Length: 439
Picture 1 (cartoon, rainbow, N blue to C red):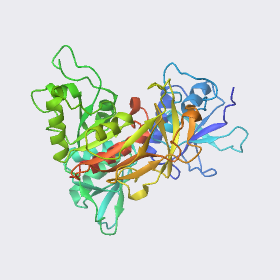
Picture 2: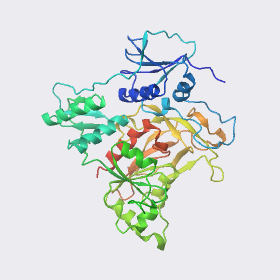
Picture 3: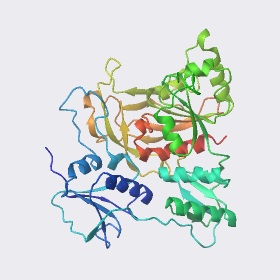
Picture 4: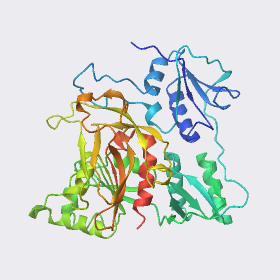
């Protein structure tokens, strides 16, 4: 048994990566009858309006289960019926949370609330060479995609979207700010030289192991899986594709897409059965199609398809079985602010792993963006240290090109769209998509 903390704080303003995502987390709490308060003045490091969930309330068990990061149970059990072994809205959704330990000095003036604060959003006034939007939350990805669909021109550099400063664009941005609650920024220097235009909302083919529809107007089509659902929730065009369907379809399913997302399938074997699928994949990459992969299959797909040389991954498996090994890790953003994938992420953040997977070698054409720390990286769930292998300090996110240099690739050792839950990882998929479609 563990003591409850005194409270959880969901900051707003300073100390919060996204006020919009803070509101989403608090709305979830309110929808589940968890009592929420807000600060009526600045207190300690927290700004007025920050949300506080005290544990002295009837729903404290639910609140603590959802907001705590969990515990490491690796020494207590050997097998888990169904992963993941740790799951936390507080650590995996898009808002930052702060745990106030039991016994800490914490007595702010608060008011109980029954609805989240309305975020006004803003577009700054004053001279600017460009308006900016940091792509650091699912809300930011959705907002950018909605603006692109409305015909607003944009470019992207290091996980930041840039917009023109003409009157029509400013009007569109003000509407988007009101709708989303996001604050746009302004650039007063010359736009970055590496800024690339976003031609349109990127279009995905999501490789899935799901079976095909058996009846109705979509009979014979692959079923929508969790990754397809997430990408659509973020405002992308996404359709499920299986390697079998890629091979058998009368028309090429990749002909009208910009990127492949794959955390499920391996590259079709080189035999007479897979002639169509292999030819279509080769043509897709040769034509500049982008790729985002997750888990072992995501990395092996590129290596087995001869798109890269020297990409390999390992996972916490025994006899090819995970036995439920899974949980929450922390990782370091070694790509920094200049990375097109992790540029908007903090220097250290949480991620979910099932099964825990890491990259063991990186091609010369790719750059590492994220690594596991050398120690202390596993924080909750079940992953015995005897199965860490070479994981400590290993890469878990990398981006670059294929060997031919005509396709942009991003590889996540673990699945950032896992079960449609780790929402704080979704912005990296968005920025990887804008960069990966930049040919």
